[in-house]
Image (cartoon, rainbow, N blue to C red):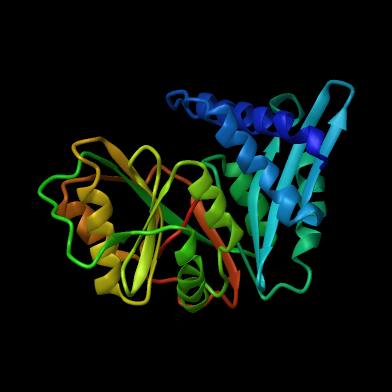
Amino acid sequence: MRADDVEAVAALAFSAGDDVDRRLGLPPSEPPEVAIAHRRYAHPLQTDPGGAWVAEDEHGLAACALSFRRDDLWILTELSVRPDRQSAGLGREILARCHAYAEGAQARALTTSRDPRALRAYVRLGLEAHACFRASGTPQDVTEPPGIRDGGRQDIPFTEAVDRAIRGAAHGPDLEVLLDSGQQLIVSDRGYAVIAETGGLRLLAAYDEPAARDLLRAVLARAEERRIGVNWITGRQQWAIEELVAARMELASDTGALCLDGDLGPWQPYLPSGAYL
């Protein structure tokens, strides 16, 4: 991938996702803001150019596969194939090229779309698939606990320490991209969370379940009567499921999977980001 591919990669990722939604009978998604999409898809070129690959044909960009290495963790952040080139082997080929960037990593992680073909491809890589829930709705009767404050870049070293204890690797520069995209970092003395620009939860990590519950309550309390979402909730995160049910959020299992492999740490209490895991 090169710098002049960024706009085409962003467009391809959206069109491929929209095609999956259409085939599965789901409502169409809103396209991301141009600046936010550019920031996300330019990010791998700045931190992990060896993990960013594209495929071209006579019609332009046909596929992309983007990945990161954070400490000893390999993360697949994007795999998209143009709809007219799907089910012809191109996705498998570019995934193999991108997966070569995982060589020597002690762990691997990714989230899947709802496309069953994608899940098959990731299971073939030897990853363990964990079904996920998502929660949506307007939180009810939630009060922000004490001890939560707004954070910023000065708190990234603290978040890195939490990450390494809970998921085996720090987010580091990925958190900076989230902050630059208008998302809010909140912290306590035992963990942190990132609130999406829409008010939902983007990411949460804490040293223990009581701290994780407090951070999730803070996110829900700050929704301020907006309808929000919380995604990538596996069955291991019962603390989160309990808090979301108490806040009268709607739980659904019609989502993708979290695929993991290797020395990841406890991965609990933890709610990952779809893009940065």
